[in-house]
Amino acid sequence: MSYVAETPNDGALVALLPIIESALTQACEFGSDCPARLAAAMRYSLLAPGKRLRPALVLMATEACGGELKHALGAAVAVEMIHAYSLIHDDLPAMDDDDMRRGRPTLHIEFDEATAILAGDALQAEAYRIVGESISDPQIAAQAMLVLARAAGASALVGGQCDDLAAESGGQRTIEHLEHIHRRKTGALFTASLGLGALIAGASDPMRLALSNYARDLGLAFQVVDDLLDATASDFSLGKRAGKDAGRGKLTYPSLLGLDETRAKAQQLVDAAKQHASVFGAASWRLTWLADYVLKRTH
Image (cartoon, rainbow, N blue to C red; front, side):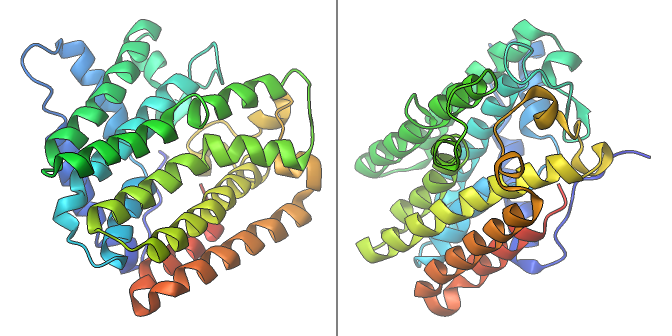
C-alpha cells in the first residue's frame, strides 16, 4: 500500500487545486540553460503531492478582498516555491535528517545532497522572479517581493528553523519560546500568503488586519496539529516518519502541555481564526472552512 495525499472532499479547496496545480506545472519550465538534473529535482519537490495550503491562502485572500484570482496566481506559485525550498533544506542530514516526505524519498535521498541544496537555492530565486514577472504594477510587485522576503528571511522562516534546531540541544523549553519559533518558522509564510493576496486585491487596512490576525492564529494552529500528528499518527498516514520529534528531543506542544491540552489549544486557535475571518461576511466561507480543515487534518 502506498501513501495517498489527503484530498479534501469540500469544494472550498478542491475548486482551487486544479488552478494551483496548472500554475505550478507551467512554472516548471526553467529554460534550456537549466541543467536537466536540476530541473528534474526542482519539479520533484515542487510538484510532489501536497495540500497546497499556502498558495490556496493567497487565492482565498484575493477572493475575500474582492480581487481576481488570475492576478494572484504568480504570487501563489512563488509562495509554494519558497515552501518547497524550505522543506528540501529542512530535510537535509545537517538539519532535520528526514528520508521521507509526502510518502516519497526526500530530495537528497532521491537525487543527492548537492543537488538538493542547489534545487532549494534555485526555487527560492525563481519565486522572486515569478513575483516580478507576474505583477504588472511595479510598485505592487516591489511590495510583494518585500512581503515574501521578510517571511522567508533571517528574522522569520530561517530564524525560526535555526531556533528550532537549537532547542533540540537544550536552551529555553517554554511555551513562549516555542510559540516564538513557530510564529516565524510556520506562521510567517501563512501571514505572507494572505498578505500577498490582500495586496494584489487592493485590500483596505481593516481587511489586511483581519487577514493578518487570521494568519497568526491559523499558522500556529497548523503547527500545534503538526506536533499532535507526529506524536499520535502512523508513518503511513503522515507520509513521513512519525515520532521523530520525541526521539530527537524536539521542543513540541505535546512535550510541554500533554496531548489533551495541546488538542484544546489547537481548538482555541482555530476558533479565534474563524472569528477574525468573520469580518468578511459571506466571503469568508473558504477561510472558515480551511480553519476547520487544519484542525481535522490527518497528515
